Length: 149
Image (tube, rainbow, N blue to C red; front, top):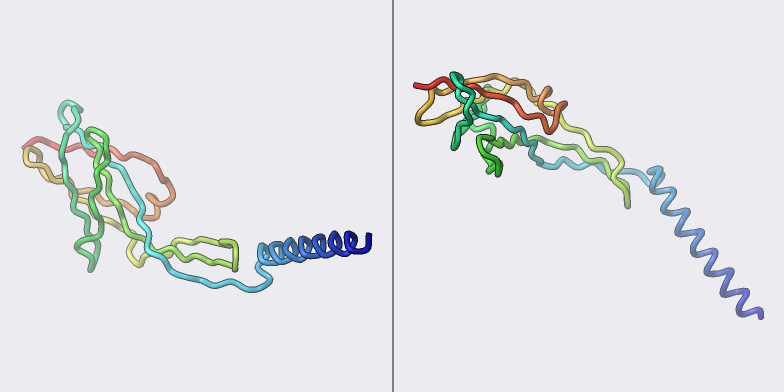
């Protein structure tokens, strides 16, 4: 009987110790570390003909900022008439041993992004957007009206 009691007491004490360690790490009592990670934010633009509102297929995009002439990448949107654009951003991730405590997006020096939509049959359309506004509205689809040449 003493062996069973000792076994139960040791199992319960190990479980309490593990639970205490996990709880202490959840509240970051052992400290945290910060790392910067590269991530991408996707914005979607629906390209339409300015005169009649028809969708424009196979439009391209070029993004530029001050001192940054290649500020985005074009991705396949898997939707007709939609241009998916990925903007790089830097995330600061604060982690404890087991948990992610906080994730913040580092602000860019110049939040204004210039986008030029390009198509062979349409005039290049240039718009300027704020990255802060795009980050605040994830999943929003923007409308771009392109005039015919």
